Length: 175
Length: 273
Image (cartoon, rainbow over all chains, first blue to last red; front, side):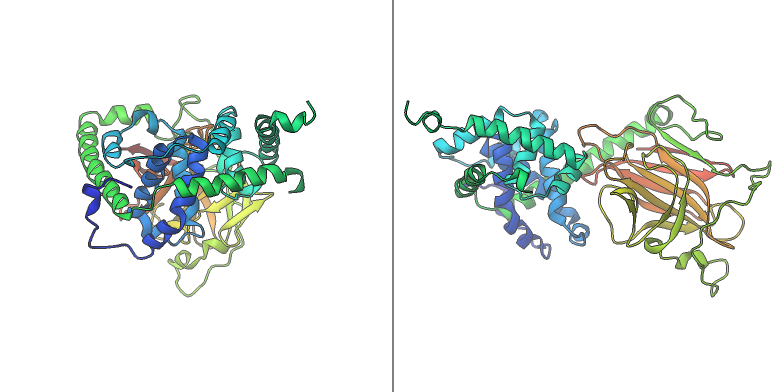
């Protein structure tokens, strides 16, 4: 449940197409940023903020081939930039955070723990690959590196994750 | 992508996506609208504050972040960030090219003498991009659908960062010869881009054929982490020939407004908040 205050009053001039776009992509972006940050309220903050930045320029963004790429880039940049540290909207965001976030399941905690052990770039590449469904070229473009670099990151990240997520009983079934 | 497939990890992330989506809050459009409104109010207040500072220290703003071009290809001010401009062709004392520039072959319609350049489809044009520091270098860019790429590296018609339907171009008599010129912005795209924004302002004269007379580009380094990807927009040529555009951060926030006059050898310009 989300607390409401200023946010309760919808504007009288809805922007055509934005609401559908927002509804279609909000949850999936939350999942990606949740995996990267390991914190659901923070993920919610950056994704909402990214959509809030998209809203006033939606008329232009709607003409792009892939407006989601813009929002995704802003959300990722917010997640990795000083924005979180500065917390310029901290007070406002605090008013609108979920009242209650149920504790994550053991599986989620395990994956978060494994992802947190990766460097931020490896973690981003892994999340973009597995949860955003981005191609190697799209990740390379997003990270401004060569495709081969992304391949290397994914290989290293996957190896580290596989090791971290391996159940010891699987390795030693008879031990 | 077989070498990247791992059924176990695929399953782990698939399960994670389901569980995390179930735990995620519901979309709340009203909250997004409220955040946007709050940002708008904050931006207005910040603009007022910046304007007050700009009035107080306009010269400092020029000399710290931007420098007003230079003569020839020798960039003044060492390696500091700024904006550098030059003419790719040697000129005489009157600013007239001594040698005939290598012209592009894009045909100009002859139905509007003096204004024909306005009818060029830049997304499909052949344009000389002189040497610059954006990372893509000099080339005769043969644009198709707004791009001229070789192995993913090259120029795109536009102000950088996002692909745009319409080219960033403006027309006016920049050189003062009574004939319309085009101020066109192209940007180095891909991993080669080394400047922020990775954009090149081209001064192109239209008659008898398209010729690139001048170039200006940012010398501000690109951020290694991918942040700070500025872009150019709101380009226009004022009635007195001054070229104006805005530098914006990737979120669309305005960084500064660049204004430059063509001296015959280079743009003499600077960027102010």
